[in-house]
Picture 1 (cartoon, helix red, strand yellow):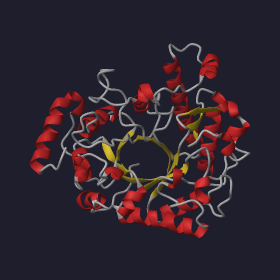
Picture 2 (picture 1 turned 45 degrees about the vertical axis):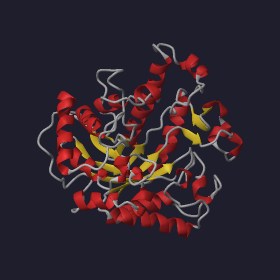
Picture 3 (picture 1 turned 30 degrees about the horizontal axis):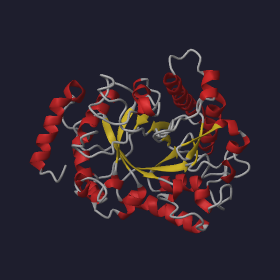
Picture 4 (picture 1 turned 120 degrees about the vertical axis):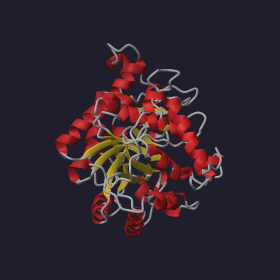
Length: 407
């Protein structure tokens, strides 16, 4: 979809609402809120956003981190979601897992400072919340266990690990794995006053053509009583989510738990409860029953990654927003929307993303749904550079006044 005039956009939005049926029914437009999520993801895996490269000095790493926090505050955001466990490692002194290689270039090497502790203190000093972002099951972005530090749990327990798609993963079908990764992640919650625990969209790995995730032995041992391997896998992820939520409440009451899943649960062609989309389905393909987590109130917030433009033929932002609003309606789970800032101005993306106003239109459209309590932008590198000015446009159109995070 190319550039839209205000009138054309309004007509398109009305048409979409009419087609969406009961799921899109909503009261009049929500006014700009004094309390809403305004967040940004700060990714550390492969040094995507921070640190800019491995091996910087502690002072350089700290300066870059503070610059990202300053940018968030300057953009009138209120939350930074910092990836603190990108690959079964840690950005804090953990008794469970090694220091992340993305700090020093060598897994297990002490960087000489405490990145997570600093991030929490400095974010709070700027009026920002700090959500600690964990990838629960990814062990490495390669398949060679010998490249892991000798003391790594994946080397001490090779039976926990499954190679797939050029990466190593912990097997969530093993109860001892789920217990370990939960304890490893929540060590950070015990040590630091993080405002939330945050999972992204990686549960079972995304499908790779011609490859099989080899969990036969775990299924034979633990899959009895399930109607299928798929049902068993979904139950494994359900247990990880539910048990993590319960432990957070025990360790640090008041700390929230949020998940940012792939933006499509199921397509309506597969399930009448699904969305009017033709895309990968988190329920079937990565065994993440994201709708259930919301409806059962297992999590405090959900932030689906709606990384498509308005009018996308396979997954239309303007069809997914009302669908997710209907899912969250009447539950205790707050709904935020994940926004693809990284696509803005990228010449490899569709024509819609060449328009600097596309993201701003997303926020305008979402205001029609009171269930939508804010937005999170991927990611910090683009937030800083903002080559196309898309984020500046969002700030000018929607963030003129500060807002506190939802409670």
